Every structure is written in structure tokens, then in C-alpha cells.
Image 1 (cartoon, protein in one colour):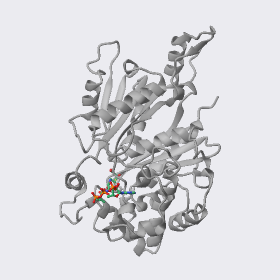
Image 2 (cartoon, helix red, strand yellow):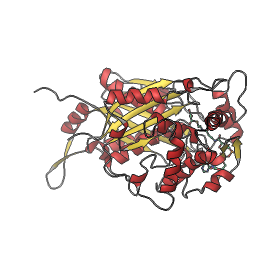
Image 3 (cartoon, protein in one colour):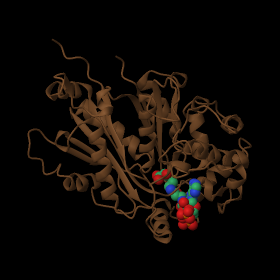
Length: 419
Ligand code: MLC
């Protein structure tokens, strides 16, 4: 009998607690990896691929090789081979990693690939954190004052403000919206919704950016497992166990047992590491990444029911709304304002099906990990397990990761498996 066409699936995911944890990035990565394997029902020995993104708090030469050696994946003593890769596309890393893992499954015939990220930037003292973060994005002329990253995003926000496409309040409303979403997620760091005044009166970090409009620094780790559907079918067939009543059932974990989530398509594109002297549309890359993802998945924005949009700063989220087709070009500010009022006194998850976990601004942002939370929340929404924040009938979802200061965009489209 011919084999059914194999698809690339997310068959497991897991994350550690978030906060100021006093643990190393590697410990957080290992815990997240173990949790993701458990939710797939797989063991370390079942992996033949691993993709890791580097951490800021505990950097290692060849992070993926370091992690694979620590967890005993390397040296590889069984049949076949193991491939591991470190991907550095900044905060886009988890989505780049997901797309790379899907390619490894499709083109390199890997059976199961883990994508892992972890960082402990909250446990780093602020001067040390800023020294490392500034070094990453500073331009050669030193034109970005410290903290360089908020200042870089602020330059873009100011450019859009000057164009008259946004108001200062609309930028702040993004943070309020994310905090309203986070308040519904049991693991989010922000437990209570901010008022607009809270955000506008919080400490000024850059001319048009206040503290509550910065990605919320945290320690944490998260991981996903990508596998081929054929491998999982075979695995299930070979791994039957007998329960007490004599009925056989597979030992698959809860995510894999329901078929996992299908990776329908993706796209990536790049921009400069720091904003050019003259900001214009040419520095942005989310539009191109999203267009590739829609084209590969053969879908349009209206075919999607949930969006996980990168929101390290409000301007990133606002640009993503337009780039991913949630709202037409030039209208994101007005769209956010409409959502702000719509969700002001209680709302259903379906009224605002974006970042239902609260995003970087309110869920928590361990450096390059947070796009993994977008992926995990997409999986929860697609599986119907987002208790207390479930958007009705989510069949397809988009996740966007952004690295540097709009320096890299990675977009993936995920779907429920078709029976
Ligand atoms: C901070 N706090 C928040 C918050 N941000 N609370 C709610 N929502 C937010 N968004 C809280 C902290 O938890 C802390 O609470 C208090 O405010 C002070 O924050 P801090 O971080 O301890 O202050 P400080 O040490 O002075 O540093 C301020 C800062 C720093 C703005 C310089 O927070 C910062 O750089 N943040 C941005 C991080 C960042 O840029 N990440 C990368 C995004 S770019 P308490 O209770 O502990 O006092 C990206 C792309 C990429 O994502 O490639 O990485």
C-alpha cells in the first residue's frame, strides 16, 4: 500500500515557569525540552534533530551542540545520524527554528526535531543586561543612546507619529490590550490589566516609549517538537500498551495523540541590524515574510482565526497588524483604538483573537524565547485547550517572530490536522 503523504507537525511543546528564577539558561532549556518530549510521548533517543537559539545570559559557542551534548543526544551511538543547528535571527529565532525543523523533516528526512530556547535576562543585573543588549544592536556611529533597543524602536515609532498615521495614545493602547489579554492567562507575568494612564505615566525610557511599553524582561525556557506525520503514525503503531481492561492504547503524549498541529507554510525576510539614518519602508521585512508564508500555505489573512504577533514594543505590533493583513495599510492605529474601546469592560476571546497570552509586553519576554510563546499559544488555540481565553473555532493560526530592531522576520502558518 502506498504511504500517505507525510506532513510536518508540531507534536509536542512545553515551557518552564517565567520570572526571576536564578537558574541558568541551559537548565531552563533542558526543562523545556523534557516537557515538550513528554507532551509528544517521545523520548530523547527519538530525536534526530535539534535546533537551538543562543541565550544572552549564558552564551555558548554552538548553543545547539552544547545543549545536545548536555542532554546526551551527542555523541550519537544508534543507527542513522543526528543533526543539530544554532540559529541566530534574534527574537525571530523560534519561528526561524520551527521553519528550519520543518525543512529538516521534509528535506533531510529527520523524524523528530526539537526547537529549544531559554534565557535568564531577568536574573542579570540591569547594567550587565544593558551592556550585552546594547552591544548587540549598537550602530558604528553610536547614534543610538543606551538602552539601544528601546531607542531603536522609538525612532521608528517617532517616524510613524510624524507621518500622522498614529497617535501617542494609540501606541500606549497596545500595552493596555496586551495586559488585558495576559490577565486571562494563568502563567503570564502581568496579572492585572493596566489603564491607559498607567502606561502613559510610567517611567520614560525613550521620547515616545515608556517602561510599560517595553518587552517585560523575564527568565524562562520553551521548546517544541516537530515531526513527520508518517513517523508519528509508525511510532504509534509500534508503541501500543495494554491497559487494564485489555484495550490497546498508544503511549503518545496529549499533543501528539490528537495528531499535533500541521505546519502549512512559512516565510522569512531580513532588514538592517539597526535603523538607517533615513527611515523608510525599505527597512521592514515582515510584509515579505508574511507574503511568502501566505503564498506557501495558499491562504489569505481572512482564512486565519488567530494571530500571534510580535510585540516587543507597540510599534512592532502595530506594523505587524498591517503586514500580516489584519488591517489595511495606514489603519493599524485606528484599529487598535477600536479594540481598546471594544475590550474596555469585559470581552469574549473571539472579540480580539490576537496574542491571547499577552505577548512580550505582558506575558513575559526572556530575550529570544518569546516567539516560542506565540507558537505555543497558537497550538493551545488550535487544540481548543486555551482555557478561559479560547477563541471559538480556531482552525488556522499565524505566528510572527521579529529579531533585532526590525532586522529579521519569520512567519509561520499552523493548522489543525484534517481528519
Ligand atoms: C518592566 N516592568 C514591567 C514591564 N517592563 N511591568 C509590566 N509590564 C512591562 N512591560 C516592571 C519590571 O518587572 C520591574 O518590576 C519594574 O517594571 C522595573 O523594570 P526593570 O526592567 O527592572 O527596570 P530597569 O532595570 O530600570 O530596566 C528598564 C529597561 C529594561 C527599560 C532598560 O526593562 C529593558 O531594557 N527592557 C526591554 C527589554 C528588551 O528590549 N528586550 C528585547 C526586545 S527586542 P519589579 O516589580 O521587579 O520592580 C526583541 C527582538 C530581539 O524582542 O531580537 O530580541
